[in-house]
Length: 267
Image (tube, rainbow, N blue to C red):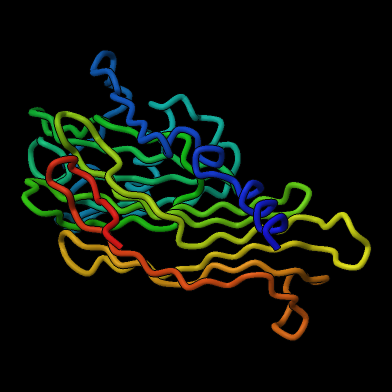
């Protein structure tokens, strides 16, 4: 039992191996030099997306996507449709008014995020990016204690098959603090991994962790779910087909820590 459990624990991919840049809270500051090709017009794009003026929303979204990818030297993504995108507005950055936040995902493995901030000339310019993310399935905003700005909640999803297979969903929270865009919390909310068994009797060793993440207040997060290991001949096995090895409930509480400007686990 101990040996089998240790095999699982050492085989589960760490977040840093799946998303090597985002897991290290990498935020890239985009140079203000030669940024004319990375700007959006407030009147022709931003106000249309906000619904403040009439216009073609689809064309405005296409302008955002094209501008972002060209500025970040990812024009090849435009040749590999379909691209998934999400666009929201929020006051997450020390600049004039709300920022435009765009997430673009390409295929099963790639995602990027860019933040456009308003400049004095009514143009929006990329001021922050997060790259080397995996596909982004959700963008939302929360308020943290004693923060002037909103924080960004990103959910990523990766589905890979490498000998066995694994699926993972990750929820991360970023905020702007001390002139940097920082990751203040991260947690897997879903992980399923299967590894082929060496023996002939059972085909798969399977690990599943599935939790619900509740942002229940400005400074508190609760996590609850299950973490279990089993053997099976079928990746989509029913309970009757499983040979359960270990099953534990998951229950965690995180609170905002002013001293570190991050969430910390208290239980």
